[in-house]
Image 1: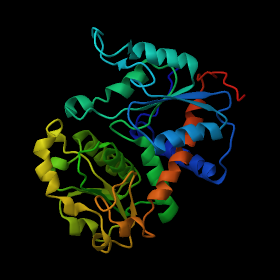
Image 2: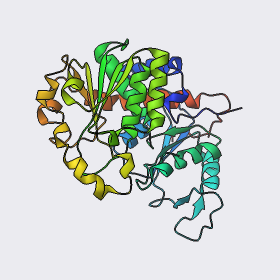
Image 3: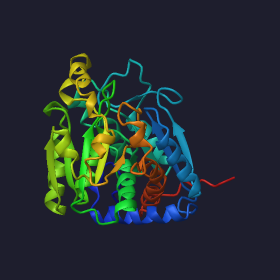
Length: 346
């Protein structure tokens, strides 16, 4: 029997996603449950975390489960992911053993592993989580790699809280913002996917063509538009992009052609500090909502006035991480063939 993973929302149909969101709304109203009784999840963090770790660890506890938190290379052995490599360097064990052993201990595995930011042609293969999915015999959850599907669900849940469940043809602006260093494209990739999945009229606003997202995610967005209605527009013009927007979602990301050559990207990045989300830009919108995945550098990505305004729903979105992840863990752990690890409280 094939075990279902949660690596990307593109692998799940709209009915599946809607069911997760319905269950998440239930958890928002009633936090406690027994859906993970007798079950455990291993959470592997190759990168730092605050919201992701807290929400997954607490969510498992609230559903009567147990979370084991590991940081490979720090409090766990460093892991090798390449096949056929001679392991005479820093890595101590191979993913083929790690994933299979953890599968004997726990019922779910969560993985957070950012790209290396040196070569996008390598990073886009998403080797770490794909290897876990290959060798694991229990469901694997993407806690952020080159996409952030849990953030997608929390984001769309927040939009539905404020705009209603039908988001079709709402104007949605996904805007690049300045940041002093290049960041992962994961949240931008995910926002593009989920907004087009729910039939919104999406504008991707970025400084130049060099900041366009990977063609894979643009192709997903166009497919979503064809299947769900809505539209996709690419813009480099701030005023026309913001005008009439119902939602502004901000994120900074690195220009893919400059991965590994950040010194060459820096002059381009520094020339576009004016992409900050501020009151003047938000005044162009249709009383639009503003959000961000957090963490956010105030007065760099967005001004204090925007962050502290009633239009900002970033805190609602962050709260929803807890609810959607509980729904996701409960859904995956209930699959036929997922054995019970036998964990018991006390």
